[in-house]
Structures are given as C-alpha cells and as structure tokens.
Image (cartoon, rainbow, N blue to C red; front, side, top):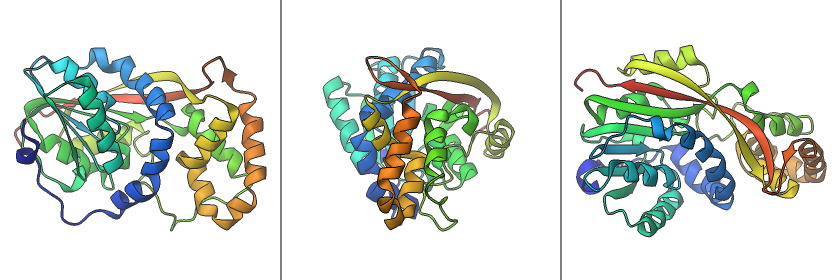
Length: 296
C-alpha cells in the first residue's frame, strides 16, 4: 500500500493535535516504557482473538509508538498491508524506527489528524487501542473509521471502562485534588478524555450513529505497572493522565505545593502491589468489535 495514495492531507490542524504534539507527546515519550508495558497488556489479551486474516489490509488508528501496528503486520503477513496513523510526530518517528528494526516492508506509518482526513475505502480491518476516546467528535471519528473500510470490513477498538475500575489513573487524581483545585472548564485538554467511551450504552449509540453493526463489548481486566519505583510512579502521575492535568492546570500553585503533592502520592503508592519489576495497579477496558455491513 502506498501511503501517499491513501491519505488526503489536512491543511488546518486541530488545536487538540497541537496540544498533543506540544504538551503531551514529550511526556508520553519520557514514560513510554510504562505506557507500552501497561497498554500492551490489554491488546495482548485480545490480539489473538481479533478477526485479522492473512493478506488483510489493516488500518491502525492512533497507533502511538507503533507496537500494535507491528503485531498486526506480523498477523497479516507479507501479502497484507498495515498503515499506522497518529497525530503526534514524535510517536510516528519512533514507530518508523520500530518498523525498521522489525524489517516489515508491508508496514507503513503516517502522521495525520485522522478525524479530519479521508482514506480510501480499502481496509479490511480497522483497529485502535486507546485512541478513539480522544476524538473531538466521537461520531465523526468513528464514521471516518467506517468510511475507510471495505463493505463487510471488521473493526475493533479498545477503550477504558469506568473510572472506578481504573484506579491506576484515578487514585492519584483523587489524592492530588485533596491539595490542588480541580481543573476549570477552560483547561487545556487532550480531547474528551480517557473515559469518554466508558459507558456501554452511550458508546454503542455513537457507533450505531456512525453506521456500524454487529457491535459487541467484551471486558478486559489487567494489572498495569505504574512505575519501577515509587519515585517514578509519582513522576509519571504528575506528567500524564488526570493527576497530571490537575497538577499542570494548577500552574504556580502546583509548583508551590509540589512537595506536599509528591509526599501524598508517595504515601498512596506505599500501599499498592509491588514486585521486583515495579508497582502494579488494577485497570479495566472494553474491547469493542463491529462490522461495516453496508457500502460507504
């Protein structure tokens, strides 16, 4: 597959894309060993069961560091094609390095705001791991995924379940917000947020509005590492996720209270499961599968 022939360039970047590239991408790159190790536990749980076939043309939306795209390329084999798309240039640059090391000529990447672009309706399978939750307009983004699929094509995406089922993200936020104020309505964000598709009924309605059929939800639970040490776990939470957003939006007050925040988080992490690899907390996601039953 020639990437240049499957993609329509975007001339006006979304403010959300700028935020990801300018603010979040450097933090994600710094902690990619935690993110990939944690997120991959959810995709590894379901990857063998995905309806991906030899020779398929596959689109990986929000491919991040490229690890799922590599797995998909191995699944489809040399007669297939895999295109990984992400809006973060740093992620795509890293993904290209992975592809080179993997020696998979049928794997390509593109830096693109998927929600604002148009792709050929040529993909047999469309996949996303923890990317669809950040679509500025979920139905628009989901509709773009369906539009990229052949009639009868299959899709699967993984999203976080409810906050209560994901203490690895929420427990630190709750601790930080005992010291710092909650972000205001005008806070800079990464989009709707990691729990925007947690509710099954709401997400099912969004997918139906986007034109998908045969929609099914499967719960996936996994322990994820939140840091190799307590110090790293604290730093990770203050950089990324709801706790990081609270700390960032507090600005000068956050820096003024940093010692108190770090001490409170360290106390919390003293109580979590620990082994020789690091600190582990519960997480839970939905695997959502569907089909493009009609033409585009």
